[in-house]
Structures are given as C-alpha cells and as structure tokens.
Image (tube, rainbow, N blue to C red; front, side, top):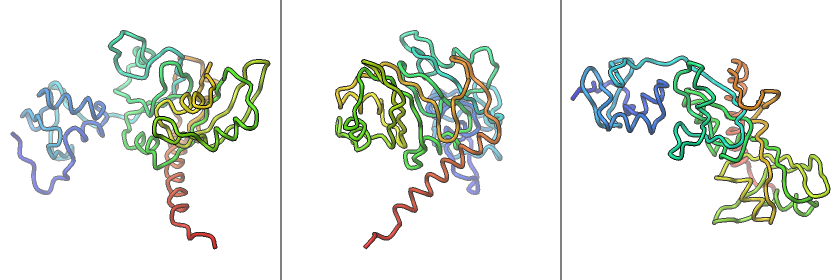
Length: 263
C-alpha cells in the first residue's frame, strides 16, 4: 500500500478523481473499491485514502489520470430522455445525445426528470457544478409550465405562498401567467430551490396537472434558440456569469440572515 507523506493535503482518492474530471464521485468510489485505481503503481481500495495529484501518480484502469480540460455544455433535453449515464430499463439518456462528440466524462449539473425538457448543464468542473446546485446558493431556475386548468389569482397566490406536501414546504419564488386558453394555460414559474419534482408536486397539491414542463433558464443563462436534442459549449463569459450568480445569491442570502430586525 502506498504511503502518503504527512505534508500531502488530505483529499480522499475518490474526491481527487472527481475533481480531476475523470468521473463522478460515486463512480470514483466504485472504481476504487473494485481495485481499478492505483496510486504510485499500487492498488488502493479505500476511497478516502489521502492523495495529492501533484505528488502521486494515479491510474484508473491502467490509464494515467491527469486534470481533464474543463468542459461546460448547455443541452436542450428532449422529453422522454433520462438524466443518467445508464438506465437499467434501456431508456434513452442524455449521454446518447453526446455519444459521437468525443468529450471527456461530464456530469449533469442538477436534474430534469424524464417527462421534463429544456435547459440542462453538464460539466466536469465539479466545484463549479456544486456551487450551482448547492441549496444554500438559491440560484434561480425558470420554467415554462403548461397546466390543465385556467388559473385565477387565488391559485397564483397559493403557488407563491406555498403548500406542505410530504412533510416538505413547496413554494415558487415567482409565478406569472404567460397565456391562457379555454382549458389550458402556460405559467412562468421561478424556483430558487430544487426539491424532487418540486413544480409537479406543488401543482398537484393544488389540484392542477402538468401537461408540459420546460426549463428555460438557469440564473442568467437562457435556453434561447438551441434546438431540441442539441448542445453547445458555454462561452467563457457565460461560465463566469453562472459562477457569479451562485456566489452573489449566497452572499444575498447571508446578508438577509444577518440583518438586524426592523423595529
């Protein structure tokens, strides 16, 4: 078993693999336990083994692991596609849409369920992704939602004020009626937190069904005219804008929590 110098930063091996962009944290933990990862030529089976990429030679399946170039993608996820690397039921995944691109490993930044569509980010920059998905950061996510009813002001107010469902409080940060028909309507719903199936559960608790759910923006980044099923690289300024959105959202939340009460 390789020995780690006392001066080496104590980052677990699985975390190091993830931060280098070799694979996800869970994939790294599995690979380490399966004996597929070596440090300085010797297999290590402890995912928490303290490792430094600057001091140690790391291989995964006998291939040297080095820092991958950072990749940031925006994908227009179609309905019916799942956000997983593999599906035990053989359903199409978002990775099928990237299969021919020759990209390094990428992880989804958050999730969209099978029936939902729209903007999905993918990246191998795990720190950037973690900031955007951290519940404490409260990064806005905007959705256009077609519902099976014509809402009145009471419903819109209830969606914003929130409900308790399954022991969780669900609420929208903002709800706007976009357009209405005789039986259906489209709402714009903004969330600054992301609970499992948040919008669907919130609407169901109000007796409303969802016909379509499309994520149109994450923070300052809009889906725009990106065709369904297609993807593009984010521009450097877009990557920076999203990082700032996560940071500024956290700072606003911290400021609110430390404000003196109004007397």
